[in-house]
Amino acid sequence: MARELAEVFTKPLYMIYQQSWLTGEVPVDWRLANVMPIYRKGRKEDPGNYRPISLTLVPV
Image: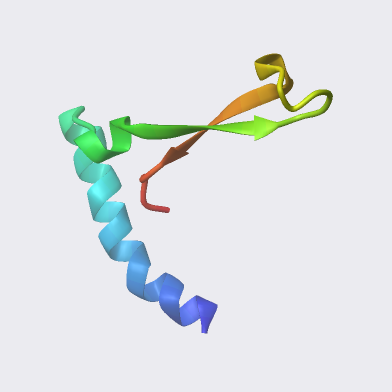
């Protein structure tokens, strides 16, 4: 099933990435990110014990 889905999505994704590469333009949604703090260790009250991760909407 995964191979069948890969075949369906390969061509459209290729076209999207190729267009972005050729024009040098990146869609606005690809440039935006939601930054979320992820707890590492230590006291949870200390902001220094968190690291940021960015959640993006880039199609993969």
